[in-house]
Length: 222
Image 1 (cartoon, rainbow, N blue to C red):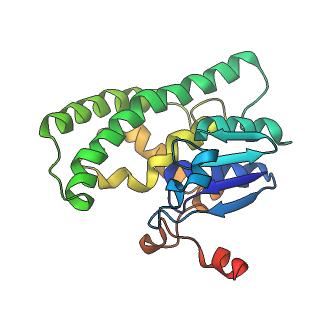
Image 2: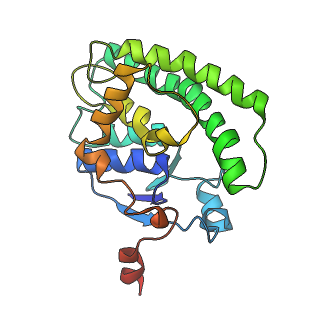
């Protein structure tokens, strides 16, 4: 198996965390975001979205990080990340879907309009969209906060792929203009997951390393 990823990419990090957690063996090729590696025709033949991550396993070309994580969890000998059982798997998939459709959608929209546009794209964010996304994030952060009131993890008593999906925005959580103070249980959860070893090891070494090919990969090629 081979995984294409980008250093610091939240979706790449969630898959890399699962790779580390399961101990599954695969080759990892990091792409250079700034050199347009995801835009070349060879990569687009693997992932027409021109995004990361992408997993190759024989004839299977799999993109979408949550699908990749489910696949890796089922392929590995460690089934703790996606436990066997119809009910528990439905619960995990429910939270994977919720994170993608609601929590991350609100978070990502706010990050784009309030941070990415003015700081990196030389554009003003749309105030109406900023206000809408703040309201949406408040709505769904409340749901997550209440869910975590009496639990350490999203589903069950241990980390699952639902947790790696939820935590993938951790690196950028404090960068957006949003007041996290009212969400005590959510904040404690993010701090707990931030320190979890398999996730922590996927963090970029520095801000300058984000989007770049690691020196270790360049050395191996050279």
